[in-house]
View (cartoon, rainbow, N blue to C red):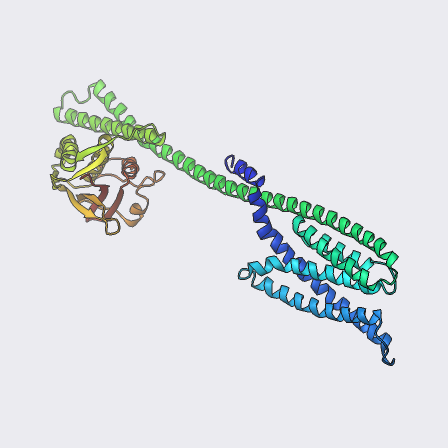
Length: 470
């Protein structure tokens, strides 16, 4: 908002905005006002026509007099007003197709009414030297229609010269011509002053209206963004609160178990039974390993969320990267007699951050081992795929196990941090599912994707797609 408003204020002071307002707001306002004026004068001319008809009904034809000229002028003016009124209505309905006609329409109405007022005052000179009708016509135009001051002075000058010439021809007393011309000049001056003030005031008001609309639009946009950010923040805070609640619960379990086991060992309850003592040591080791893994994932996740985790992509051989992760987990797999089979092509390369990708493979392999029964197997496969739309190459890596699988409910909430969807492993191994959340975040940092295919009691397949490095 701070950047948008100054740019609009700068635009507000430039002629470009004046031109836009004249082409849009002024043109629209003039069309409506010109249509309203012509529509208003249609019934007025009809009433005048009926008045003259009533007063001359039954009388014998007589010689032409100024009233007859006024009556004829009124009839023509009424017909012209009707035509202009209908034209204005038509232009309002087809405004997008006739922009030039819409721009010229108010100028035509201005000239028609100013000329008609001048003619009425010209014919009136045979009876009286007043120029009230000319005055009213000019003031009506100036206070209703928005005419640019330069055009206004041009139109008024033409009408004034026409009026003076007409008065010169119709005024019997030539000594009065000069006085009438001076009065008419005063009318023109007042009309121009009113028209100029009216133009400037309306242009300023239209600028302010546009500025207010722009500010309102910006405020509405900013409010929507703040509302969306607030919703996301509340959702994120709720998710994190729930996650840390789950984390605290899961961390408390292994630690309490480790404390209890160390007490048993300290008291020497299993000194005489080597097999039971070894079992206790294994339980203690598993408990501490689970706590260590959980804390490691929490540290990585929090570092990634804070934006502190640096992304350093480099060229990596997929086979070697997967194999190094397998070596780390060989001991864990051996405890359940699970075979990890690396079927990845030795010739595929990706551009990735080594630490992040190792974390991804370790978590996926660890989960696969956890949910695979003893004496089972886990496979890692790969293939090169080409995008049909842009022709880009990607490497698709699949971690496949033939274990317990997952339900549809578990699949739908698998990558949501606030949901604890990871249950016990085949040997009662525990976990929170935070590793999968990390996997998704890290894969998306590489502009890749991760999807899961799984059925209960049939196993799971985690499919990673990453941009290939040629």
